[in-house]
Image 1: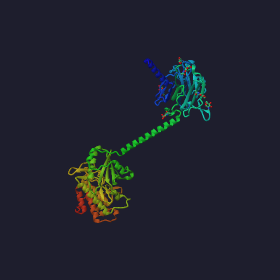
Image 2: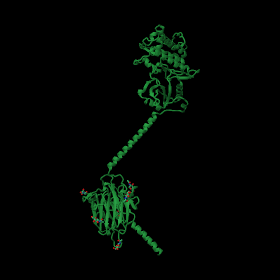
Image 3: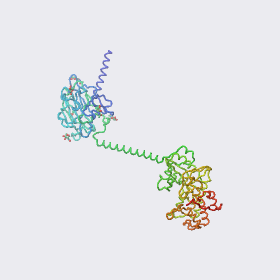
Length: 632
Ligand SMILES: *[C@@H]1O[C@H](CO)[C@@H](O)[C@H](O)[C@H]1NC(C)=O
Ligand SMILES: *[C@@H]1O[C@H](CO)[C@@H](O)[C@H](O)[C@H]1NC(C)=O
Ligand SMILES: *[C@@H]1O[C@H](CO)[C@@H](O)[C@H](O)[C@H]1NC(C)=O
Ligand SMILES: *[C@@H]1O[C@H](CO)[C@@H](O)[C@H](O)[C@H]1NC(C)=O
Ligand SMILES: *[C@@H]1O[C@H](CO)[C@@H](O)[C@H](O)[C@H]1NC(C)=O
Ligand SMILES: *[C@@H]1O[C@H](CO)[C@@H](O)[C@H](O)[C@H]1NC(C)=O
């Protein structure tokens, strides 16, 4: 065979194959389609062919790229053809119609002079109706335009060379079982299927429409005898056209199939791309938006609250821990632990309010140990290290007549001291609280005095450093279950090394317990502690406050006892609640020790060691020197 000839044959065969291939096509979605687009037409990401978007006065065209040869060139007959497509028109506002769309057969893909506003993007005012157009269109018209003889604003029409339809009908479909046509709304937003069939033999053009859920009805909506040979040119392009007028619908084509000389392949309706949210369901969409926004608001609120809760929780339990604190062997409680132990420092856990802070009862969550937590505000950062050092020292002090400091905790501007819990509270309540049904017996009082003396001696002499308590008074003596007195609250005491000069500081202590020299020198010493202890003894025996109110005059307890003693009626000062149930000799001795300790002359006061000896009877009571002018 001639190689040239065979090459030509091959080319012809290839051409035949290609030609044949374009005699039919099927698009279930347009993602892989061969369309020529112009104007607003575009293929969306999910494969919808969108002819118009919401921009006004625009047009969109989409033509199959390859021209069709619908005409037998030898006899001029137009071949049979069949096409079907699924479309949907989404309107911006429900019920407001747009311009619709049209299936078009045209000799060109451009439709050059077509107006955007009108004529479905097919014609302009001069060429509308011109037989030179060679245009066949199936219009899905949603506008009633009297100029074109439209029947209504929801019709299907067959247009030849112009928009004045040769045949038109209200959009409707034939329902088989009742044998009637049912109206359809083209702008419902629902996808609908259209079939256009032309029979070469009958010279008949049928147009059928139905909702997507209904298979092709047996009766077409439009059926026209028409010889297309004068309309169809040798090469024709097939496609869609749409325009947006004053209203702005979006026209979509979801799938399309075509076949020459045969039935167009049925579309696979389940694989068509889905439409965007329907404008028709404006209300649904609005409510969806409302629900979504509500959801977002709720979500944000919950998130914000959670964050606030976490921040508050963090702030609530925030504490300060510095490196130097690790040197101390003192137990450090976590703030959270104390917070939980005291049930969040609730009012009902409040044991009392002292000069330095509030004291709360608590129970350690793990060990169930009962504790008393004293909250002391401490703002100075400089003093903090010193202060904590002092606390650390105090926690080393161990005596059965001292309230044990168990540890501490620290947060910004606040120090929390944790003490052992004393179930009977402070002594002053027993002495002065009229509501207390029980009164302290003489032996209990004596035991408390001995205990406090023993504790104070330990502070003064029993430890590596001298500890001056500085605030001995009945309210600082706490009672345990057996009514043993324990000296508490070292909040005011200062430490100084043995042998060194006592620090000079401003006068601290409680009025009525302050030794006369302390107000002059400002030096707190063991002697000033002894003075306060003397007042304390008299307080316990007499059941009276150090400064008494008598006939609106301030009367010092010490002076009163001193005078009574001088007048030989010392036993008249004892607490009436004792009911005389005591050893006279013991009471007299204790009162005299009290007077000796609270002597205005420093040199006359015994040391705590001597006080212990006096109490134990190991030392005989010296002559009490005459009270001078030190006391008024
Ligand atoms: C509509 O399509 C045109 C052309 O593609 C584009 O310029 C315009 O921004 C689109 N309008 C909207 C609202 O999407
Ligand atoms: C074209 O028309 C001629 C004359 O009527 C006929 O013989 C021929 O088969 C037709 N071609 C096709 C493809 O139908
Ligand atoms: C109408 O369109 C034709 C081409 O189809 C063009 O020649 C003509 O100028 C257009 N007329 C107007 C008024 O745009
Ligand atoms: C269908 O719509 C047309 C035009 O709006 C109307 O005249 C006709 O009565 C409707 N038919 C039915 C069955 O509703
Ligand atoms: C057009 O519809 C009629 C029924 O109304 C039918 O007889 C005819 O075969 C149809 N023609 C085509 C090409 O589908
Ligand atoms: C139609 O499309 C679905 C989903 O893409 C697919 O599962 C099914 O096989 C298709 N049917 C036909 C007849 O092609």
